[in-house]
Image (cartoon, rainbow, N blue to C red; front, side, top):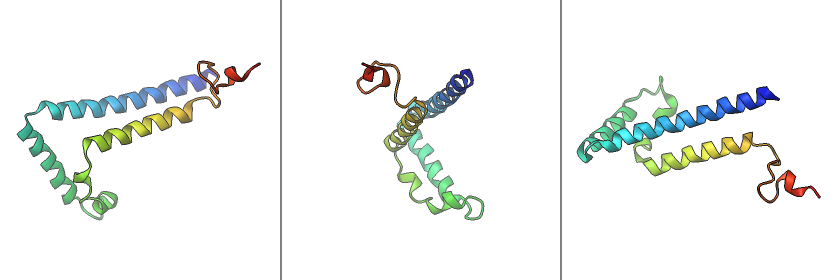
Length: 108
């Protein structure tokens, strides 16, 4: 049983680090003056459109859509991934008893 807890802890830590990395990158971008933010976003747009079909076929297919994805879209997608991961790792049903519907709450 301890290996399950240890594995869940490692996995949750990885999720946290991925979220922090995205937040750090976003904070660095937002720390730039507006004109430089526009230059940075433009550089990514050029990079997306310059990828080769053979080397990056998946990116190549959506290269024109990628620049249209905004920060709110990215945040919502990342949040959904984290929440889904937490839900999948949580014991079903929950045994904490802290909320209605948990296994401990159902005991007579």
